[in-house]
Amino acid sequence: MPEPTRRALGGPGVVLVVVYGLLALAATGRSVLQILSDYGRAPLAYTLSAVAAAVYILATWCLARGGKWVRVGTWACTIELVGVLVVGAASYLFPDAFPDKTVWSHFGQGYGFVPLVLPVLGLLWFRKVERDAAAAERAQADTRTSAAG
Amino acid sequence: MHWAGADTEATRQRVRVGRVIEPLTYVVVALACLLFVGAVYYAVKDRLVDDRLLAVAGLVEIGLLVLLVLGLTGLGEITDSTEKATFVAYLITLPVIPIGTSLLTIKEKSRWAMGSMAVGAFGVAVMAVRLQQIWNTYA
Image 1 (cartoon, each protein chain N blue to C red):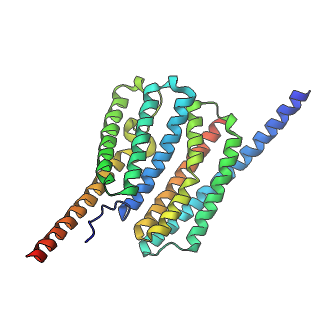
Image 2 (cartoon, each protein chain N blue to C red; image 1 turned 90 degrees about the horizontal axis):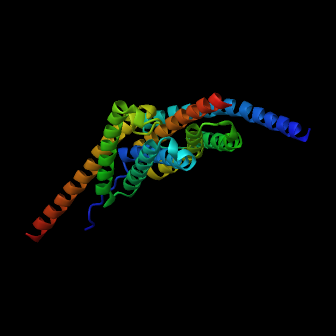
């Protein structure tokens, strides 16, 4: 009997992968160009943008691949949520440190607060995938036990 | 004399690019909105992607590719480094979206896949408007 697969690219995961992919592409391109062209202007903001971009790439990959990457994806979304909350709060408390915007500053206001909502949706989705797989594994184990008995 | 002539030619070319970018952006935004409405309709009706919807996505794609070439041609106009970075990143990201979502809808064949096409189309419309805002500020 095949082991239950953790497939993240199905149902709402298809929509999530598009939003993550879009943010990953836009944020990566933007941060790479900012760092290459004028890093001295806002080093903290540009570095954070690059970190955010890397996390978005990782989350996109985890959604697309599923399987063992589901657990990595949960971590990526957690880091993302902490990032948007910490950087969001910091951008209000220490505006001087953020002369230029990042994806996460002001809780993702520049991106319609999508960066704030997305990690929550990502976490919920990865949790569902994980739970469904665990339930399938239990069902399989039960079938084996009853077959043996 | 030679330089003055070259300057005039450069200005002419700039004006030509600028004149085309704005209406083309509006056409792309209108097509992206059409794709968005179509994809939402298909998702609600639980219909799968068909040639008609893919044709609209194809038109959006052509518009975005032309926009990419024109935008890169007129890139010198944007003097602010951050705005230029956003402009280039969006220009390059945009044409990837219709291709990505179209492939997803062909592969997945579900209501959610149509939702992803709708989200992608909405993203294209928003990012194209943002491109136009940056362009209008500098050119």
